[in-house]
Length: 90
Image (cartoon, rainbow, N blue to C red; front, side, top):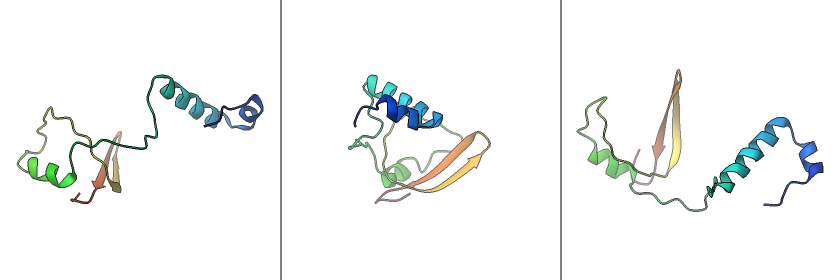
């Protein structure tokens, strides 16, 4: 990505400048916000099977990384829920 010149910054809206600053801060910390590759640990079908017996409200300490397409989104106050689907299920 090319560095932003002073003239280009003047042409950007305040919101765009804030977004670019946040992007630069992430990259300075070694975080690539738009990775070309995502290392997932599980697929949706395996998670559905593994946690089928988990009661409503019950939590685990498991950490997983998934990838897929967002096919639904619901908002409930400050909470957001998404439906994620991959090749093995939802």
